[in-house]
Length: 160
Image (tube, rainbow, N blue to C red; front, side, top):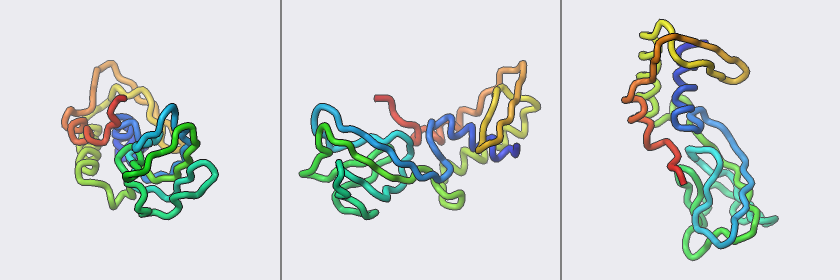
């Protein structure tokens, strides 16, 4: 497995989300009370292609003015809220095409790839990219550089 693929897998594990552009469909049930913000299961969210509230395709077009896309979810614009007890199905895109990644992501990937090149054996047990898994083992206790974590920090989903 190429160092770039391993660097990407490490970065995605740090942010616990997708850097590689991926389309996801989530079904979310709004519990208890209405909310303006609807968190989605995978992030960072870079685009929304459709939103269905219950059985109504209420917000089907990208760029619909009834909501805004946020890093980890979708916010309804005032005076609307996601209705309580209703299933909301959202199809959205996470991550970026490789030539459209934000500069901090690209810099972190470059840093991780350079770091991997300096490690004769690293402390990663296994990394899976697609259907391919690579296992790397070491007696040393090697961790990705702190600078990579700092560059990726804003892309990490905050704990609720």
